[in-house]
Image (tube, rainbow over all chains, first blue to last red; front, side, top):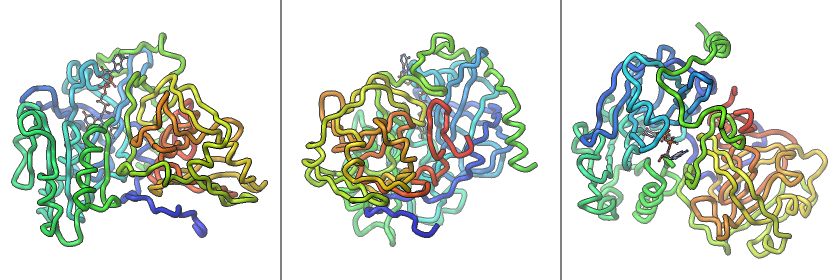
Length: 248
Length: 217
Ligand SMILES: Cc1cc2nc3c(=O)[nH]c(=O)nc-3n(C[C@H](O)[C@H](O)[C@H](O)COP(=O)(O)OP(=O)(O)OC[C@H]3O[C@@H](n4cnc5c(N)ncnc54)[C@H](O)[C@@H]3O)c2cc1C
């Protein structure tokens, strides 16, 4: 549109992907077809959902999941999509069992194969990574979920660009997807090694970084997001190339 | 099957209960302050900005009102603090499903800023933007008449940086993505112009009581 207002400071990180408003508006039935434990502690599981009209997603996107009680009470929460886009008509979510959590608690203790829940999405092109630019991924706890979608996508696509993943977990038992990491990944166990630090990110941000630099994606609790984004900025990563998804 | 067709079916189909789901909060004794689809975040206050929290000191913060106004103006931190103090006490609602009850924000009413700049009669909408360049659109009527504030206090203390400090806009009757953090200005327009999340699939208005979350709701 002619004359569209552009603020004097450009938005640090513009969205990359135009999302389908239709997909975001429509609730769809999703059938649980598999449940898999995802860490040794048994607090995190993946739920494979068959969503017949799923229109596809990009790694990093999330959806909204809704549960309905017999009296009409509904609970809805956002969950990142863990699986790579693969056209199978099925997607996977990975949920941390939050103590006392209404939705994660239901899925972990009541839901079983064959159950139907509702989803709408995929939502938000902001955190999406289509696989086109070198990606530096930093995640903690269940914040690794959208990053795993990116990692899986990258592997399926034959590793077209550099990708590095830094995963922070408290202990080996807490670590999600422990079996799936390769030499692109550095795991930081905070209980024994301490927090993610400048020493972890410095070697990736110096002259060693890929041509054109990284597109950085940070996901986790707000505390982790603040800490990790400060480390990257201090290490020289431009703020307009850091995207953050905060789980709250 | 076209998407439009499926949408129609979707809207007609009654929502089936999820097997075994009872819900923690019963619909009957649900807090009347809670809009549909929201839960009470109690003491929590999730942070949901998409960008790095900017390091913006009060001395660097400015707030500008321009566009369709008779006298465009920029306020510094000290200028803004000379306006009559005004506070919001009440609830806030985020599109990601949490609500927070009985919060206090202190600052100045947006009416005080607008009165100084003098909106022209043809102004109908605003684009509010932040020092990071984030934007959101609002009808002028949603930010006038005691419905919006520029705030620098949360509770008894300064507004924390990750929640928009040193100063943010709050428009508490709409979902909180409208309440621009690190607010830098308002431009008054004679038409509606979608901002960052609105271009990314969010609803243009965002009334929590009507559950206007995504475009098409
Ligand atoms: C974009 C986005 C993507 C996300 N992706 C993922 C993901 O991939 N995986 C994942 O695991 N999570 C993800 N989350 C977090 C997820 O949306 C939920 O917040 C999380 O699963 C907790 O929801 P819940 O219903 O289980 O817990 P809730 O019921 O919301 O409870 C959360 C906490 O508050 C406490 N609480 C809340 N209400 C009460 C009450 N009335 N009384 C007592 N205590 C209470 C609970 O005990 C618990 O500690 C994402 C969030 C966002 C915003």
